[in-house]
Image 1: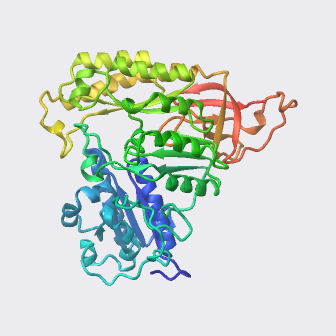
Image 2 (image 1 turned 120 degrees about the horizontal axis):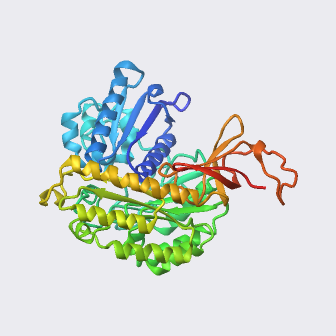
Image 3 (image 1 turned 120 degrees about the vertical axis):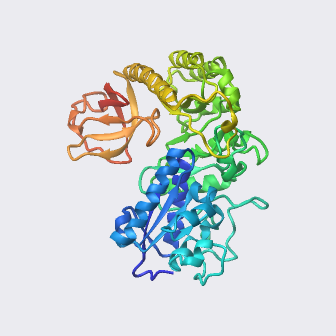
Length: 489
């Protein structure tokens, strides 16, 4: 292991979704506990860990390019070792070992716990095989046999969930670096969507125990984290393997009792698993954001059936209506795939009609691309790529107009904003309950000198805004996905 007085520096480059971000945080915590110093800049690191994505072809290409860029630092910078983790490493382990000799080791999920040993050994050629005999140093001091595992008995260990340090009942992870943190609810997926290969390499759905999640969130809150985003491949399946789907409702209630926690954001919701009880809990729970990240994918029932998904425009509109009946200000996010095999012009028009009626806030559109190991590869009715891209552009233009209307509807109203960045002139940037980190818009708050007079500030005295603070603002305008605001009086 590295000399604690002069720790070897490691940079972790993360690609893909929020679940990967959590894995990287846990890897950073593991390496830090083993005596390494984790840095942000790969050019200033002795070793680089690339946490890859394999969701679609574009993500695979980006992952390969990032690995090659990291490997180039062995010639041009100070890096001596490059390790590859993540979904690409899990899905194409043997292929990458042959085709990417630039990487010193390809590390599948089951061997994440050996990252410190691999770095200490320099990831020599034997280490590329991971399972081969190596002269790896001993485990970190806290990973002794007496330390209780965070993995339930009889359950396969989740990726990046390691034996916890003594006295801690959560996975090793890096210390919080801001007021927001992502926490993983589960791993894997039991769904059989014809466009998605994730279950083939992430495995079946496996929930973390509620006590693990609660202990981890309480630990983060003790470090100043006030907003937690709960992530999984499918958050609404949480608890089905632990005795029942009510587990998610009970977890949200327990989270509301954690000191210092102001917001809980629930991501990746399957519409056909959103029960009335869960919707009511999300509307009534004081810390749960009224933010609904719905996995819809399309609005045409025939296309959804070919995707091996349920739903229709009518059913989705009914769901949106039920949510708005509980909270008229609820925010919505979703993703849609255009150009799926068999999609007709009439299906696209139905999607457009749905978007007009549903008035969702944040929407992303993707053109379908063939994906290894999915049943969609065998479907007839392929849509030409150029046609799929044109459909994406068309519905994106529509959604841009709908978003502009939604944003304008907040002008003159008040929001509570979590400040995440403050400029030298006192202006700030943050998010309300409506915006998830890194995926939606932001709220830009004018400099503190623009504070309005009001009951709480009768003379309009300017005040300093700090990162991590929640401030009441009045929305004064909108620019695309951004709201403009000033401090409320």
